[in-house]
Image (cartoon, rainbow, N blue to C red; front, side):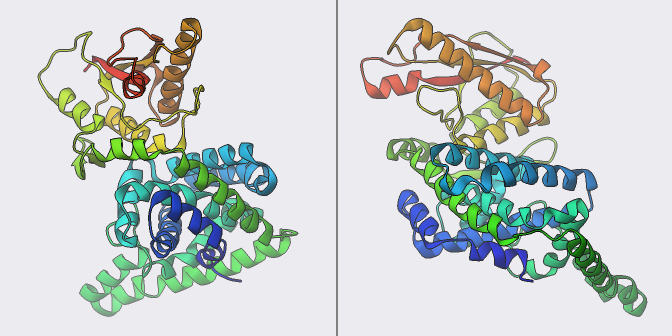
Length: 400
């Protein structure tokens, strides 16, 4: 039986690589390396947390639901499957990485020689591939997945970039103890890991025999097709104008929050401005608003695009680090179309952002959301650039 990582690598099709390379402006070799690195990082993070039964149960539940309803049917389902595969990957990555997602994207981009913006695209594209491969290991439930991850873990060390947050190799501690403590430490650390691996192999083999699936390969094949569509959707949704606007937010840098979480954020982005204001002595008022600068919605809809997830994760991490802070979210549109429809769309979008922050662990009691339609423009609606600036979600701190 091949390794999980090998199975995922086999599912990375040339079409997927070409699609991402073309839309992201990267080399095919860099994209392929990025996808393989992203897959290894996801597996390493899962393996690091596999002792947490509650976490692993959540992974099994999530992959099972999407694996059968989305990934397995995505090959011929068209646009709906594309959106569903993107949603599946986004939810999976949120669960796996939580507040570390931005830092992980940066590490993957660096390891593959890609731009910082491409790191998010690569990780989003790798997620459904990993989910499809894991779906083939779920016949044994949580125990079967735990065994598969335990077997995989030692082989990942040479693939995962150094310094990825949240990944801890168990044999590192044993090796260090052996160096310091001699024979007795060697007995306690160096021999324990092979024994655990052997046990995992035996348990995994028994679980597979009694619960063997009819077709294990199919989820991987269909996941590859789903990922090709999902990656195309995620990358093409980011126009050249949007990429240029995001590039103007400055270089990414690491900023540590009071709870120890480190964010990888643009120097001129809203996250950095929001943290500065929260930590300042400025009193709360009704006029200081912060405009999200990396949120994208489907045209005429309140559905958030996958590319928005990084900023939503960052804002959720900030709110967790400052538990006394409460906020209000405001939705706005330009003046094109019916004012009543614009008001409803702006309200739906503000509430969509609020709902996503709730999913990321923020107490709804700390938030309000309201749409203001085409009122309160910040730019001239006579130009496309001005209308784009007026279509926004803003945040105001109401308590700190």
